[in-house]
Image (tube, rainbow, N blue to C red):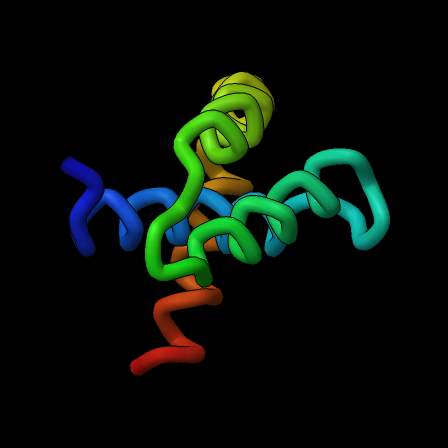
Length: 79
């Protein structure tokens, strides 16, 4: 059931989180772990789930402007 769309969505939240979070912080590390998990051909959902939950909870309390700025920054890198 896990497809490339899921992988892309989860990778996006990990990259946005790493862009916002201070290097070495809990969320920065968790986002790196999620990126590593997603690099597998068959990610283990039991490893992915708690990482996504931590990141999602953290992102919900971030100011929208910080999240938007991180997205813009990432889009400029790829575009």
